[in-house]
Image 1 (cartoon, rainbow, N blue to C red):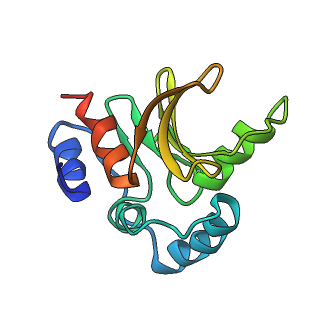
Image 2: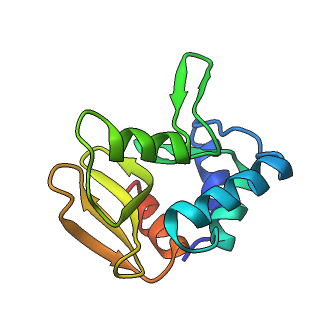
Length: 146
């Protein structure tokens, strides 16, 4: 399994510039909200991702940053903002899933009822893969780009 920082370096080397790391105050702010919404503390691996790059986008795979950002003509979704849109958009969803990222037809989520990380189909929220940690989910999602 590659380290999160290795994936960030690879993305940048392949022409996908990443944002700088989030400010410690922003990570602290989102940590409390994450714990309330997800029912678990912000995982250390996700904290490391945010400290390295405040949101990650590589070859169609995105992991959410601390807040929505429009930068250089691109939209980078934020963690809490994205969950608000996905859970309470046009129809409120009654689901234990809390979302951390996405790719074309899949969403990356933490299932608070099963205490597991998942890739789920965007339409129907059917579990496609299960993971034991955020780091494992992140690595598997990025491995599809190779």
